[in-house]
Amino acid sequence: MADRDRKVAENVDGPYYVDESCIQCGNCAEVAPENFTQGEEFYYVYKQPENDEELENCQQALEECPVDAIGDDGEELEEEEEEEE
Ligand code: SF4
Image (cartoon, rainbow, N blue to C red; front, side):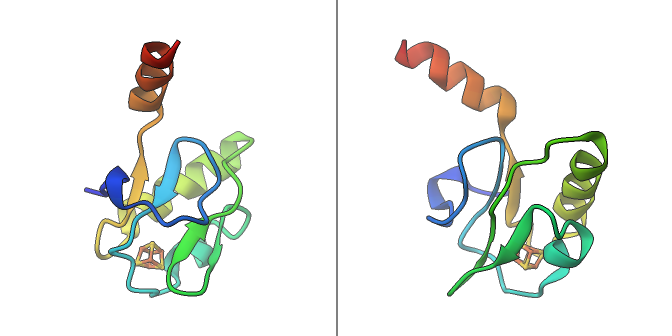
């Protein structure tokens, strides 16, 4: 499971992210090119999914990542935001 304390800095805010265990295999950017791209050291999420197709692709990328470096913590994120208010 991805570790949100080790998120790659380039990730945009939102539920999906890549953490620093990414080994740059490139699969996520092939499966979900609208959302994942290659950074200097790791791949990262440059755009959160905005429709069902992108959501499906992101979910597939998460499931296929060989090192479980992709996380989706939408629910936990919402809880955190509520706590901050
Ligand atoms: S699939 Fe996983 S290991 Fe491969 S580039 Fe994407 S985040 Fe990195």
